[in-house]
Length: 438
Image 1: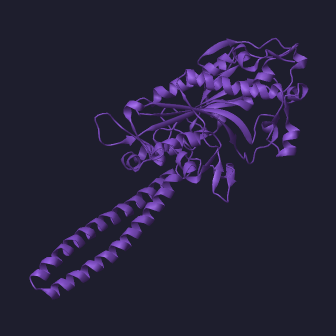
Image 2 (image 1 turned 135 degrees about the horizontal axis):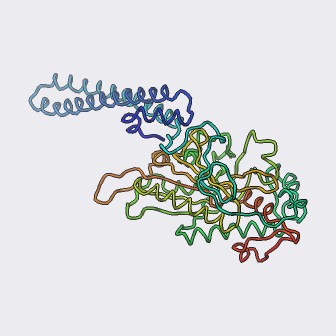
């Protein structure tokens, strides 16, 4: 969440940032936070004064008793008791103000960086790079060309999955419901190959692998900002008040909740493979066909904890890492800088990676790489102690998909169709053990 220091010292910038993110009634929300904070601080000041007076009067009682002024001592005792009762009332007022303040802050999103473009929705995102020959609005254009495909045989991945017996969507419906596919034979091996490939590439890039739980408590959900913002999109085990994770970002980042790190240990670089669970309420139509949008899927996440001074460099390194994976998979891709209105609740800046679906003639998002600045760290109380300083400061947190598997699989199947079958990219062949699906 936003810090009170930022809100109070740079009020206008915060309001402008929230408006850029299309947060409704930004000025009113910030004014309400400041009013509650003022109430809390005034109560704190009154309590401090009252406690100081109570301490002073309590110290006088012994002296009065020694001097034989018993009546005065009793009056002092009565006053101290009265002050203690008032202190309890003020403490209750402070607690309520703090609870209300935290609740208000949790409802306010992060503010975007200056380089985040203006815009309300996905159509306002800016394409900053692509490896396609033609892509409107790109700054960098490569020379990716499609693999030799017989045009009549260019099938969508759900038909290819059925043709080669790779994925059974109907069986998933039988076992669980829509959005829970069953991978079979070479389909399952392709999934496993991608998982191992992505983890190995992350290890080579200096990431430490974590195997976290896929079920978290509410505190973890609040720590990374999924709660309360995305509560309706998470599967909730109500009896135990646990949540199925929507991404490994949640458990991995929460490793550093209530932790003070040493600056020399930063940046921390973790990666994790997990199953991810999302209700995807309200999704329908062509966007949910096949692997396009699932309720359960596999994903490798990269997470960094860093200093404010180095976090932008970390972000660039993460973007380069994800781009390198797509290059090795020989996929057509583009990179978008998201506009303010299309950013997540918690991010300060976010880049999406999309791969082109040759059969569907559309772009599919496969990764989001975000810098959250101090927003998550403030919720998590994730801090570091700068060298030569005793006072800890808030870290910056970053994460990204590297990569989410369903749409990668869809793109691999659709873009690599040949007369002899589906070609496996060279970098992936040592992991699959086969070079073609036929």
